[in-house]
Image (cartoon, rainbow, N blue to C red; front, side):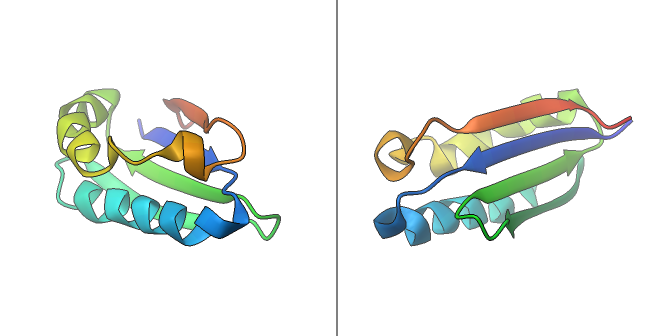
Length: 93
């Protein structure tokens, strides 16, 4: 079954491009990881940016995590986002 990782960001206007750049870097690194099915960023037109990554399993997500965090783990989302990231993880039914 496909496993989804969804991150909803609410960037401050002055940091919107930095958040988008970070999310695109995440996607670029994810595309090189085993088990990734699809990844991208949705602009929901309300100011939020929604990152979606679909994986073949939760195990693939765990294996990819070190490479992903090496890329974005130091990004200052607490400064860039108006509120904490709303993260959702689970099987697609």
